[in-house]
Length: 388
Image 1: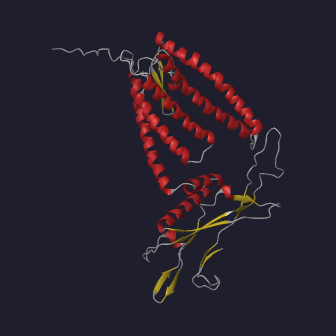
Image 2 (image 1 turned 120 degrees about the vertical axis):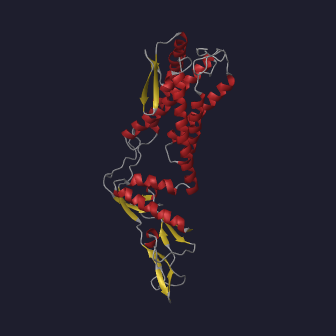
Image 3 (image 1 turned 90 degrees about the horizontal axis):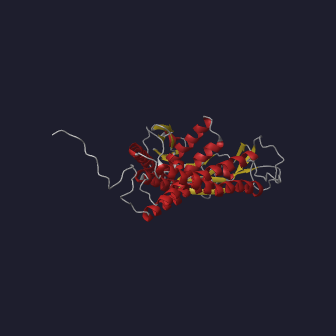
């Protein structure tokens, strides 16, 4: 029980005291401990599928510090449940608004209570809160509670709590603003992708690993989600040379490097890193492999550019819009809680982008070479026939 009362007066004898009741314990499944899968060290003896009592080691209390005035006939429902009043003559006076912040109760702060527990620490935080923020916080608590009633697990609800608790609200508002630009750049990149491939006549200088292009007898579009895959006709000598640089050389040399790294990393993690289960190790190894091969498929285009000593064949407008989104992803990498491997995957795109920019500076546009539309700058445009 949390009391707010006059100093020097017992809360049981203070007629103007305000109090709230909150739980310091909860009943939930214990967190599976991480063990060494090879040596089986630190393997738990107790069952993990039975809920046990946990102690909430954190308690956050807020009091509204500003003066406010409400219409007696139109009291807001969110604040009404926390309001206490007393009559002074003909006036009804509000008592201080006391609020226990349930959003701050995170799963990571829970401590399992067992037979070996001798101490239960409790960290109490007290701060003032503005009325507007209090109303927003009440709505967020009600929303999280509603999600749990609809079947969300405590872990899912805890991740939603982390968005508001672990992030500054102004920073969170900036995140939503930046996300709007992310959607805009996605649309512009998609629009320029369509325009680029609409005028593309050949696959000279284009890596099939990056642009998902395959051989066929007619040009048509295959949609993979929102990404178009364009199939071209028979290859000429220039396209065959590009395919040789792309598949036979770049992918061959890169696979010699990345295959051993992926396998060696998985074996190292199995021996020296602790996991909750074999399933956890398999998923982690596969995810790291996906990140590694995602990086692998971006590199052949750099090698093709190097061999051809040109970048004029690339769709630079769409590429720049995608690069802007890459930097926006970097912002989200610092804001959103995510695994370290996924955070590193966001920054790998920056490295490739910087190399692309270096190649653009290193290989200036040669007007005798074909551009991204398969034509030369020195090539005279064909005039339309017309009658006098």
